[in-house]
Length: 335
Image (cartoon, rainbow, N blue to C red):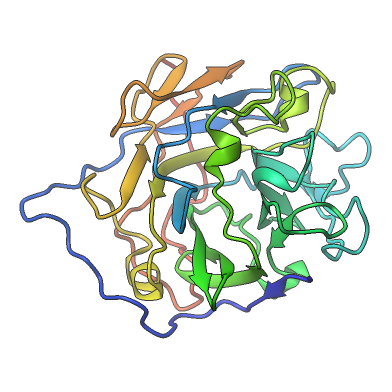
């Protein structure tokens, strides 16, 4: 049941052909991103996302987003006074203990804290700036309760604490007769995979969140959800902007990912069911451009949470497989 980590690669076998956007469609460049900052105890900034786009999670899927973790903060232990400032250096082998995933900075906390294996969907920094995907589809009867899709040891993949924007792609792809392959890609390179023997309809947990604890329904961006709502005074969280959050109701092919990871979207791409561009530039909500009534509510956001720094869409793919064309610092704008 241990995770499979894969050193970054630049190409894989073709699974399907690329599908071109509709002729004449224009992809808009992002104007702002959503930034999260270092917090004091009991004062975590976060985005609460309870309306996961319809069509995402019932079968194969792809989730894409851009991130720029703030590398001005140190790497170190988060077990004491450095919990709010440090990027966690913990790198415990997945499934080796029941608490192997407890230490790490939550970019996204979608944990079902009543039952980690049922509906959890989280992204967490560990091992000095590496990212892993924690996923509970009801199949993992392992220590810790959910799957890990991330490099182990962490040094098998580069740290993302380099001041640059990075693109993240998560895929659930059917394989074999009844298996699902979970894939984590960074900047068009495959970092890790994990096989599950379940093809659960994740909407059974996400449509009404009835099995999640009260006040913890949904995905919490930028913070650990129990700290966000005050059940814990503090926990290690994410610092930096995010942008271009895209939900697809299909598993993108390896060719699409390796050749198109850094490209903008027009909004009419095949299977695109949700698109958050964070271009609002003001206010306490970020909304789905495809379903404007579905919004992420923003809480305790610090001044400047609408950032003028945005991903370098269309940037060159560099030889190390990881994007490195952005400036090494980011700025923000106050609404």
